[in-house]
Length: 355
Image (cartoon, rainbow, N blue to C red; front, side, top):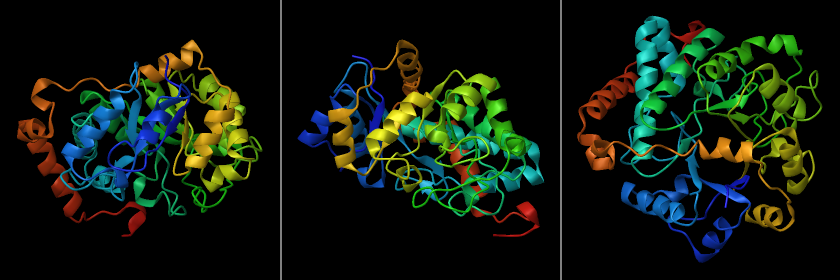
């Protein structure tokens, strides 16, 4: 059995019989975990072990775990600074900023890998235009070159710890006011004006970016469909112009940014026709059930290979459990460095002002 095209959520901190039945369906290829699924490191390790034991090849296990305000697991985890904080450090000392980003990526990934997760949907590579509250301090910087360097360093740190990075939200969510969780954002810029937003992706792709998450944003000068459902964006631009060979995720198809384009079945079909490899459907079990009953989709061999490559590498023996990881010299050093970066107030602020 290959990995299916759906990534779904589960209700609690252990699998219920109905969760197991759902996750064994051939259309399912992964599980995304949220704060409600976490109580302690031991509990999370047990939950991921349950998921991993269900199928061969094992399901992908993922979480939105970026740092700052988007960090699903907090007690007994390193509290990572928001990425904007790393951008401010970069403005004061570029080498230190890149090193902090690499350390953040390593800690983020090492702590998750020690508990059996394969993926963190990070880094955010949207540019900080000062208009999007849903992005805000999740963005590294306003300048494309700085975002590319910092995101590349974070991706390298994740790779060091055995985890693939997922750059998001392609082609860019930072220049729209609306939050795609609750509304449909529209970016009316011409394609040539999006060059800065695409720059980090070009750089990361050249350095082996494993996966991308699409934005539920409409760019009407390019296509009438949101990027997540658009063959023009996924097939022509991302895979064609940018020569991206990795896996493509949609953002959650239950979000309002996608809901204007038909029911969940229609959205799923559009996303697959656009060229997406895996579709997120979260916090709506009826929508998942409808897709399992009515969606006809068989992953092709290339798509299946892209997804299989996202499985995390097994940690080194000395980092294989949270206790061993925290006893390591690298974790202690990185944890202390990131705590200082999180807690100290820098003297230089992006865009010339504090926020």
